[in-house]
Image (cartoon, rainbow, N blue to C red; front, side, top):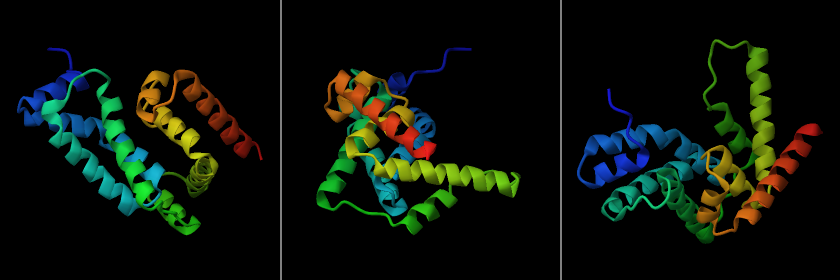
Length: 183
């Protein structure tokens, strides 16, 4: 059996007309991309819209794709640019009820005990509130690291910040989140 293709190889194959390569990329990254958008936009309708737009932009740019960075960096850069454009037009604000409704719909096995499900819900809710309290730059760096699994250089490429700035943003974000959970 051959080795599994990298994301970059799949994207190049898709650019060459291989539709199955796109399907594999979509399956690999749809969850991560959607979580990234939902946590940035906080409203499911906006996340749905930009999720579709991100994939549409990827499709439109397939022939211009060059594997100069990791595929996930490129994909998240597209999504990040769309989020920034949305914020520039009108920054959406989710109410506490809307945020709570979204968190309730997150995947949680039905077989879990009610106490455990409530505890996990409370932890997710506390994390969501902690993320909402972070300054935009710290929240974005944290989400790119945690959701996207990106390194400092890749986060810097997406945000336009230097490596040390990204490192500081992550350190401050983590400190604020820890402080929030300590109370």
